[in-house]
Image (cartoon, rainbow, N blue to C red; front, side):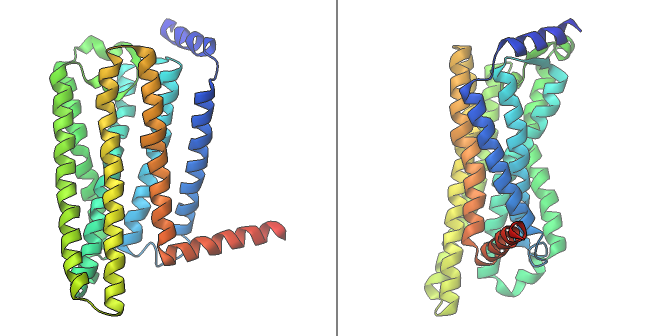
Amino acid sequence: MAGNNTLICVFLQRPLTDRVMTVQILVIIFLCINMLLIVTFFKKESFYTSARYILFFVTLLSDSFLLVTTDILLILTNFRCSVQVWLCIIICLFVIVYSIVTPVTLTAMTLECYVAICMPLRHGQLCSTRSTMYCILIIHGLSSGPCIVIISMFFATASISFYSQYTICSVEMFMLYRWQDHARSAVSQFYFMIMGITIAFSYVQIMKVAKAASGENKRSTQKGVRTVILHGFQLLLCLVQLWTPIIESAVLQIDFNLFLNVRYFNYVLFSLTPKCLSPLIYGLRDEHFFLALKNLMSASSYSKQT
């Protein structure tokens, strides 16, 4: 109970800063944009029966959930609120898993594009709604890999008494030793190497088809090439984001106030912005989705006028 009282006092003694207010405004705006895209997804049956749009929906949900949880962690860190380690473990479990879900889903979307262009006769079979549901389960299973590694290392090195202590909640809490930091980095690099190779392979294969295609097929394959390039750019943003905890962990050893500044900068630039702009760009460049979004906005404005 004393720990709880200390937490409340520390929270009240630190007023809301301009940075915190700015982040909250950005989070609300970006969540509203993502929610608008999610509502658009449910407006047409063709969206939630198509593998491409279902996977796009998964990225929207994953990014929205991650925005909320990381924002909570940012607020707790800014106010220097300490929580019990076991509660922090639960929160960070979701953060670690869903920070990987989006890039793995982007890789799956690239493979779907590859199948649609390079294996059109098998696209209906390989990318059916049922296959997509299995794919989502596989995506979450693969995304749990880094989390399992990090948690296993933590459980193997942390003492039992450590779980009842109070601490500033962040993923860096799991890095009790330097070798754990290196292991986390190695796992992240391995995952992104595999995803990068997959996207590069898909790009090369689609380019081969694009050169041999003509007329309508050529326009379709060129659009596929641009889609794969966009997924590669999104994956690059995710890669930068996964490097930020390593930077923050090193800065935390130097100065806590500097750690707050670096975390704020990383959160706005590499977490908030990509998680909103990338889905928005992807949704707007798709003709069918853009048309549905336009109709939804028109219907909303018309209902307000009446």
